[in-house]
Length: 93
Image (cartoon, rainbow, N blue to C red; front, side):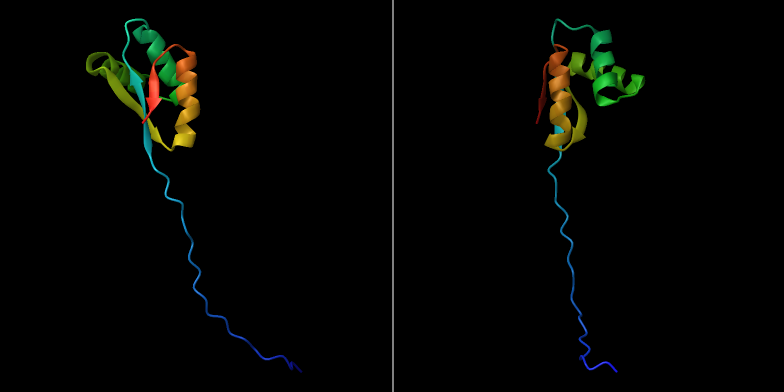
């Protein structure tokens, strides 16, 4: 025999999802790096397909800059550093 009273819990549980602010990884044009070097960098560092890397590189050349990747700061910062290591100007904005 169960002598303990039954307690019915009816609680609402709210799950809070962290809203991460999305940012852009922007690569800038320069007069030093070749198209092939920038294309290879975007493929290696950002995981672009060759066509996507080529399109971004053309935008960088003709517009002066291009947002090549979107994500959180934590995701983009290592990519930005890797692009800098290859001698290309980039920022997370």
